[in-house]
Amino acid sequence: MADLGNGRYGSDVIVDLLQRYGIEYASLNPGASYRGLHDSIVNYGGNSPRIIECQHEEIAVQIAHGYAKASGKPMAAILHDLVGLLHACMAIYYAYIDRAPILILGATGPMNESRRRPSVDWNHSALVQGNAVRDYTKWDDQPSCVEAFPESFARAYRVALTEPQGPVYLCYDAQLQEDAISFPVRMPNVDSARVPTRMQADLSALERLAHMLVEAKQPLFLVEYLGRDTSTVPSLVKLAETVGAAVWDLHRRANFPNPHPLNLTGGDVLAEADLIVGLDLKNWERPLTRLDSMARMVVPVTRPDCVFAEIGFADLELSSWSLDFQRFKETSLSILADTSMAVPALVELCEKLVQNDPQSESRIRARRQALGQQQQALRIRWQEEARAEWNDAAPLSPARVAGEVWEAIRHEDWVLTAGSMEDWAYRLWHFDQPYRFSGGALGTATHIGISLGVALAHKGSGRLVVDLQPDGDLMFDVGALWVASKHQIPILLVMHNNRAYWNDWEHQIRVARQRGRRVENAHIGMDIDKPAPDFATVAKAFGWHGEGPIERPEDIQPALQRAIRAVKSGQPALVDTWTSHPASRRR
View: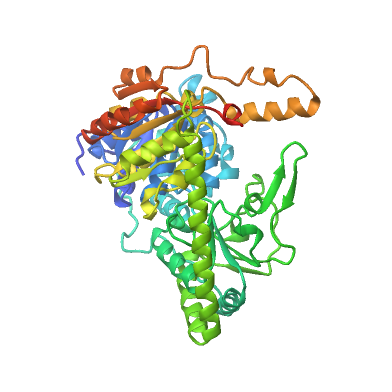
């Protein structure tokens, strides 16, 4: 370690730990409460981990969120004092519900009151700062001495990466960071177990589930987070083929290749299934019901005699504060286990059952063929729906934009970041590898930051990283564009620019119709127009290659080709396509 000063300081120990645990990047927005840690990173540690400078704490956390999902490795996000932590709260919450392992490092003014600076060290500090995020982090700690830093860090790392994964928060006293130390600090043993072994399923329960799958007439897998371990995806493919089951992907990760004939996501198979098995699933209700939005009532789409089973973490990740665990689902069999362990074991059990029963093997073969025909018909239907809007006058249909992007990238080694252009990417693109997609964004003001994190994870890989970026989301955090230029993160950003917060606009239309009031007023407070932001010009101001706004279909492909060349040269590029919103597309 290169010590350029005359001694060693508490914050140097934190850098030793970050390097010891292989943390490659640390995103941050500058703050005086961790000035000691900042100096230790750049001077003592030689800018390792490498600092990713951000304009807002939310972006710092979101970049770490996207990086963790795409790389499978944790990243650090450093937050200034109490105020920086409060700025980042929403991003931390979304990382928590999306199971993203992030090491959130914070700071507080000295707990020793005699060492506090007037005013700022008082109103920027709190008693047990972790209280601000304790309801949506897996663990938090505020070590009271430098000697406790290593054990605290080791535990935080372990907790963050133990399944189900999530963010942890470590708060470092500014005085402990800045004071010189003259005593040795014992570091954790790098050969010791950093993360516990994964949870295997009860064998008798797996055997019971294997019999249920082989005996079912129309089994289906409903999958949400299984693809967090990409090595499990081939096992799920083999399992689905073995038992002839359809697969429905909720796209929280890339759980199943969409060209595969058993991927029936978006079809009618939910209503036909007599056995639905949730794999690493939290949200049962949304895919299995039809919603009356105004009445706030749901109607099941499944058969009354459908049987439900699950493999996952179930009650392990319940929060006493957030309701992200969704409505309780009654299941006939609930297996507490990590799908990365349970699914390969289930494959072996099902293979033995099928091999010993020729009738089952014949029935499953016929079912696979029938499901493949359904999937082919489904993809033909989507192609026809896309063509119906293909030559629409300006503004462009999302189907046309997604199709044009696919045409431009299909021969590249591509990665999609966090959005799907109203699901058209899922319908028209071929997601043949798990790394192509690490899961969708989680709401407005999460998309651009997560996308930059995904692009950072793939930097240097030679892959073309593509972001289908909503306009409302970018308006929250347009300064994030500077981060990509500053840190040379190549990414192709294609705007889904319908100049509206359309999701909420649609809600206002529903309310007005129900009340017999003027739907023409629904746009008030909802449009992003007059003036419409010129995203291409903004991007250029931040050092990007910028194109648009593009309104004519024939202009999309040439702009995409120019932008791709820019990205391959190392420059981020934005193509602003003006898209229609659903109200203008209704026939």
